[in-house]
Length: 73
Image 1 (cartoon, rainbow, N blue to C red):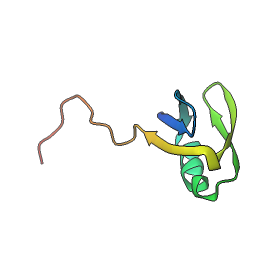
Image 2: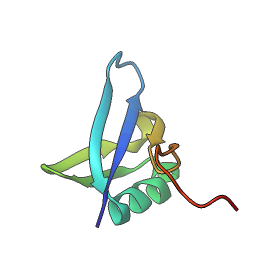
Image 3: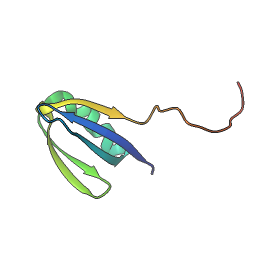
Image 4: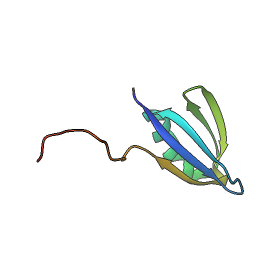
């Protein structure tokens, strides 16, 4: 499984939380964020407990442009 880069913005905090998570953990976070409850996010080096009511945004790197060569459609 590939790790995804995720940046989480938290209300009232000038810094962001930058982590690497598995696809399943990211999917679970994105589904849970609307609830505003607490969520345990498993990251590459442990677990983070987030108060989702304080999360302002979640930025993922899933759709980033990739540098490389591919076949032209």
